Amino acid sequence: MNFFQIKHVEIPHQNPPLGSKTTPFGCLRVNWGISANFIAGLWFNAFAGDSFIPYYAGQVIDGINKIHTSQDQFIYAITLMAICTASRAACYAMRTGLFEITKIKFNVRVRNLLLRSITRQEIGFFDSVKTGEIISRLSADTTITTVMFVNNVKVLIASFVRVVAVLAFMLWLSWRLSILNLIMLPIIAVVSKVFGGYLKKVAMEIRTSFARANEVADETCGNIRTVRSFANEDRECERYGELLEDTYKLHVRKALLLGSFVLVERSFDLGLLVLTLYYGGHLVMTNTITAGELVTFYLCKNRFRVSLGKLTVQVYAKLMEALGASIKVIEFIDRVPKVRNGGRLAPSKLRGSIEFKNVWMSYPTRRRAHVLRDVSFKVSPGEFVALVGPSGSGKSSCVNLLEHFYETMSGQVLLDGHPIKAYDHKFLHRVVSLVGQEPVLFARSIKDNISYGLDNCSLEEVQRVARQANAHQFIMELPEGYETGTGEKGMQLSGGQKQRVAIARALIRRPAVLLLDEATSALDAESEQMVQQAINNLDGHTVIVVAHRLSTVEKADRIIVIDKGRVVEQGRHKELMQREGTYADMVRRQLLGLDTSDDTEADDD
Ligand SMILES: Nc1ncnc2c1ncn2[C@@H]1O[C@H](COP(=O)(O)OP(=O)(O)OP(=O)(O)O)[C@@H](O)[C@H]1O
Image (cartoon, rainbow, N blue to C red; front, top):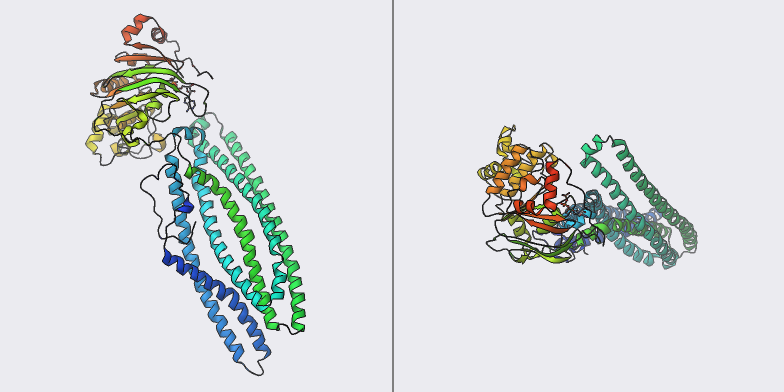
């Protein structure tokens, strides 16, 4: 952990190996040139400023006493004092500039490492950690960590050097007066330790409390339409206010702690001042030291106390506070994802066969609820398969496994005979494309949304897939065509338009496996039929469709019926209708306009 060793901050282009410790404190690079100058500057600063200036101030006093016999000592002392002051100012300027650069470099590095680590976490992590907390860690906590840390390391080094230099000078001036001043050190150390411990705890609570308030603000602003439609703005603001009130109370606790600490420290200081002047006056009267030396000692003692105070209150206590804020940041940076994307398999050709082999699954947040139970089925290359079943039966969970968002508890999900996790992360998501239930678009142009994650995609290619997804016509009717912005999360498009853009985004990758999870649910019958037609015409792609509207999957090569996490039937539409089982019942209920979406919650085992 060397904070002077900064040449440049390298942001790794590749992810650091999983499990490797990547704390920001360990990754600053070395520039010995700057470090050496820097340390030398600080030493000189400390010596010149804090030892020689008081020394020559004392010499000036003694020079004044002898001014009637010679002016030399007086002039000499003033000249050297001026030189020391100028050098000190130059060193101070250098130190300030270097630390400002260090601070921003450190901040940039911590933020980069944090986002890089967060985006590598498994999807289950985002089920339990809310976006508001992540944003809070990324913004406020990284700033506190880096600004406080670097600022205090600056003060720590400067104060430490000053304490050592000034103490040596004080001992040289008068060991008696020095010892008198040193007896307070152990007491201050104990007091600092106790207060520092409390401060670290409060600082952590403050950060967590801020993160909670941020979660509410993030949720409210992110879902403002829902909040407005329930006229719940005031309630949300009250919730936010209550959480901020908690933060305020914690800040009051911190202020009281700091105040008490300063009070204790200043009381020691006052007692010591009286003792030093009393005993120092006695030494001058007995001709052990001169009046000028007492002035020098007094000035040195003040600097010693200020520096020691900084080492304790400002540095120790504030470093503890920074540590409180940084614990979560470092924890997130060092977190090893529970689902590893460490596969290396990336064959040049993928046929697109899929097999679920005795798969059991539960979500990390509800370990005991099995959402898939011994699920087994096969999908051949180029087959069009539909997953149907009541709401909550586990259809999307199958899709989640195929995307390697989660891992199975037991059993295997195979793609072309290899476990999904054996595939390279980037390769897998190029050959397996998903259009989810609520597709999310990014706040950029339609063209950029369709070509998301791909480099050098031509407009012709984008238009080709947009036509396939039945989106071209509505896009051309927009004021700026393919350059039209979609707004945050695609809010400036209708649900059906969003779905068509999302389908085009999946098709442009020419995936070997296309997963459509209720991807056409927001389309009108005509658009749905056209998109469906396009999907049916896809050649050489394996297509898995999750659908509630059973009329859309009648033409599927195979329909797999899932109920309560188990495969209960499979076959073509006709076969299943003849079987008079769950599927036939669902179709009949839908034809009669009855609800088929009775929830089948996973049972706790
Ligand atoms: N991220 C999650 N964390 C915990 N439980 C989840 C999560 N996602 C889904 N579940 C639970 O898993 C079960 C199966 O959900 P899944 O989304 O697979 O059902 P589905 O058949 O696709 O339902 P629908 O047709 O309504 O989309 C449900 O009980 C659901 O509550």
